[in-house]
Length: 338
Ligand code: GAL
Ligand code: CA
Image 1: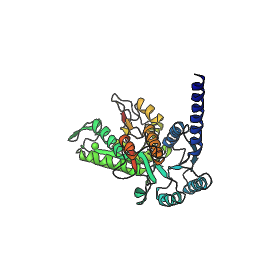
Image 2: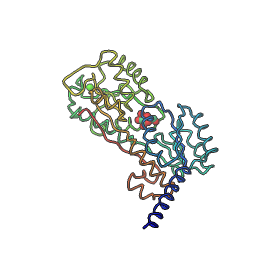
Image 3: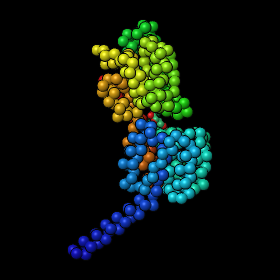
Image 4: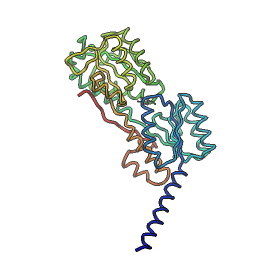
């Protein structure tokens, strides 16, 4: 009996040292493009809570500078020999140079949220991408508008204020070089056109995901088009909130009996804390969750795959690699005032 207890104790302490050894030896560098970006800061929190127990992680903020990020990555590759690096690249066009660097050190890269631009990356088995599904998010925005408009042949008059059976709309876009901005806008437009709606796009302006730039953009657009605007599609919640800031600061928000309180409905993407509270207050009509929990789960699984603790089939069972690539796109759920 005594001996049994002793051997259990020995086994436990052995298991304990094994686990802690593994944590110390599995070093992961995480490189953010800009921690002041609302969505990225919540992504970083999620990564820290989920990965820091099992891995030795270090997080770096490039503050929107690719040269700072290059330095941070090279320093880590040289001095700390990480087992894998997670890269939220500042400038997507720099991905090829980065891939070549990491290959020299035999270090796998998981890009996340900002997709690498490089034709060779897809074939490289040491390179992965995990991000949201911007096509689905654009379609969700289209569906939100569709629900409010009802019939393409006879659009709801609360929306179609000038009664021309066309939707006079505005797109506030993220960074011009960001895959999510481009795909959200494009898939939203294509969805609505496929459903038979006639779109009259009054303006399309970039506000770089940023709330105060969103406010400035709304000012430009509103001073030109005013009440001709019937719908605002924003590529993210922060810019949508900036647009609402402009309306609120200029007494343009109208209370009405309908479920949409602004002079026109505004929709975003991300489901940030603030975004959701604006939906509750019926200032923002809807959003789609940019699902950090699921994206981090996918990243975790890819780390295990790189580590040979799981198989490609097992990853595919849960998240599906896109076609034959190493890319995973995660869909989130849509939320509206309803
Ligand atoms: C998008 C997100 C934006 C912004 C951007 C940064 O997916 O919707 O709010 O955080 O990523 O790369
Ligand atoms: Ca109209």
